[in-house]
Length: 201
Length: 382
Image 1 (tube, rainbow over the protein chains, first blue to last red):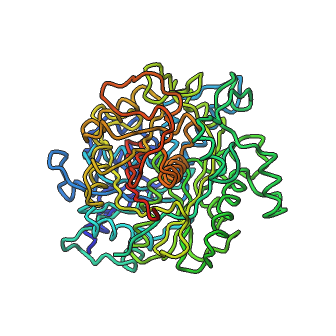
Image 2 (cartoon, rainbow over the protein chains, first blue to last red; image 1 turned 60 degrees about the vertical axis):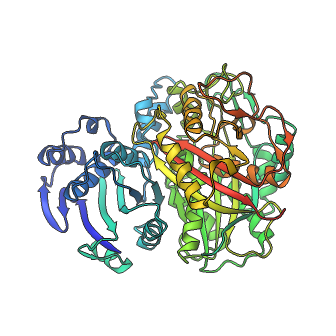
Image 3 (tube, chains in turn red, cyan; image 1 turned 30 degrees about the vertical axis):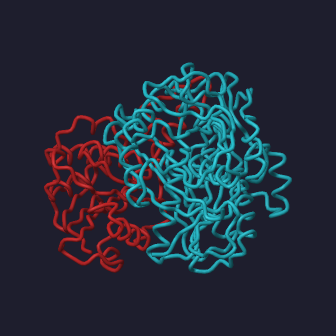
């Protein structure tokens, strides 16, 4: 199998197949950066603004890749999502925890609570791109391509998915990283191997 | 390709610390849900199923005298220790570990927690379990909302099929915490009585806590009496809404069809459905629509939420284990709390425990994020 294309979002920049497609300013916070990137990339999806940071990051990374691959909601494709990270949804968990800490200042919100699950970001991507496919979210201490490799190969071999959008999306305090890649049977820019995945991370 | 089995299993619940105590009570239609008054969890009394922490501490002393373990870690270690010893497996680099949880040690974020805030990282939880038993390879934590417990069995199966492992242990668990209770309450999803899945008078969900674990293996030797073969599985997203169930049951229908196709059987060959049935208005209606589309209207079906409440990341595995015992005993277990049908399509709710020849069952689960998972299991020992 092959890696068809890949995308990085880190250090306030977005790269597609290793080439810079958007650069924010170094001093920008994640929130400012991702909003500017959303505009610059002409994303046009108003639900973006209600998402939490992890969903914004994963959503934009997936959007860049799927646009490049001409994935249209009208032509249904079976693309599984297999994401991983270290901090799960802790960025939003901490925010939610603050809202329930003090009984005299108790304001739990369902709009925040729903994002206290890491797989919600895959739900957001599935809604936008009409992907009725498998979603799995794994947590590792560090990026662990061995499992991602075996699992996506398995999904394609067992005909559970035609392609797999795979990778790492992590948001923790002000730190964030996204590295997503599309695994396919058709010829891509590099073979799908643990070594290649690791070298692009 | 090798056949892959679910075998030795354990349930740590308020019924007791083994699968047997839970299964016997379920057979007798006895709930573990109680009205609990605990202002540290919720200002008003609420129905839940809580593990007796004194009993847990007492039993855990047989494993370790160290005091640094969290409640969830004790539950998970105790559960897993029981099946590792029963299975007689020596842990090597060919033995995997999957930890299925939605929130892990989320209570470590509380102001008065005796534990460090870092404990809230899910990889910290899996590291504790890895270290205790000496697993060689890094564990996988699966956090995929309420389908995690069933999906974990699919993932174990796939990793064995891909020859990454020969055996995979799954341990699942979530706690009843202020975090979870206040969240579901903010959705106005909590019921003020023991829940009534699929009923006309259902009024929402109860949340409960368990730890459950299982061995997934390709080895036919030393299987548990209630072992099952995984015939097929499927996971599909509704691509519709992040918190609201689909109006058409699309993802659930697709996940069941994917599992049936892999199992190479028709829907009519399923003897029993262990469904999700949270007892919220929209979830139960969505499931009824899906089972109607699948023409499974006559297949006996239950939800086990009336016994334990919704146990989140553990629920799918917990209910799979109970389903295995149900088949082994050739007994359909009652869908506790059911009164009168309250969904728009015909489904065959099991009203009382009853003997029935059972060979194949379907387990389904649905969760936030629009995810749905189905798995089909076949009895091994008749």
